[in-house]
Image 1 (cartoon, helix red, strand yellow):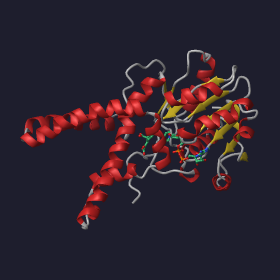
Image 2 (cartoon, rainbow, N blue to C red):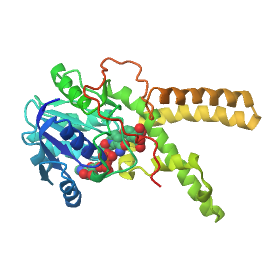
Image 3 (cartoon, protein in one colour):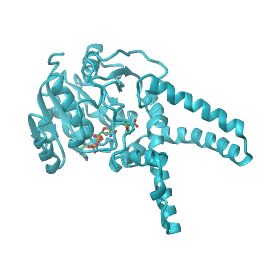
Length: 323
Ligand SMILES: NC(=O)c1ccc[n+]([C@@H]2O[C@H](COP(=O)([O-])OP(=O)(O)OC[C@H]3O[C@@H](n4cnc5c(N)ncnc54)[C@H](O)[C@@H]3O)[C@@H](O)[C@H]2O)c1
Ligand SMILES: O=C(O)C(=O)C[C@]1(C(=O)O)C=C[C@@H](O)C=C1
């Protein structure tokens, strides 16, 4: 794939921003990469890693002349960032993001995007528990979904350009509306993280209460939870602050099902327990045999899906243990 964008501006350069920089460079998708960060230390780290061509602490400067701008900061920072860059966006440019939540992004970024600039929110469903510019790698998006939520007013050609960009980095792309995205991700990503944060906290409290070792005796089940419970606190704080309604709705369903399970345990209902565990094992096995360590959510209503144009090698980053 040859160059598709003249200047890519990445606003925020942690795990996701640096992975985009590396993948876009490797696939020769952009001529110039401008990187903006809030902190000088992060910018110096990005420079030392040679992630871009232009480095600045001023987001507005980074987006000047850019035909693709991608916000890669925690979603809580998006409103202020959009306000800062809005007046400097080039007519015809595409403005996107990678935030884990989409309706909030539409609400806080949309009003700052001038007419003639195409706003296409996005979310690569790929990540790890690591953060910062040195955490990125070019294969992060290979074989993973990327969801785009373009508004009705976005020209099809602009969406097609962004779809091609993500496909060239190895992603499978699907478009949907922001509310549907937030509901699906609440149950497949946000609540699993909430459960992990909760169980690790409960175990730590138990250890403190009983003044005895608990974590020391944990085997792989608990350790699997500790991996995602190590994910970036600011990023996840913002996810729960900005996807509150969908998370609470899905948490309601989750709690109902947990109550059913609790009753089965209390009443010694072996068949009910075995039936559920048999069903969930089959789900896990179908995910593995489909070649995805991480579940690709069933989005229900695909209307734009295609295999990656030039697949990158898939690196296992879904279930590792860095301990
Ligand atoms: N980590 C994941 O697994 C994952 C996966 C998909 C999408 N996302 C989304 O990607 C975005 C970035 O996540 P990440 O994992 O790369 O995080 P990260 O912590 O690795 O990096 C975030 C970067 O944003 C910048 N930043 C932080 N606060 C800022 C502020 N107030 N103003 C401007 N810039 C700021 C810094 O450059 C920082 O390095 C988030 O919106 C997150 O929801 C994360
Ligand atoms: O693999 C992980 O560590 C992740 O948490 C990745 C994960 C997910 O829940 O699947 C986390 C947040 C994102 O918005 C997208 C992907």
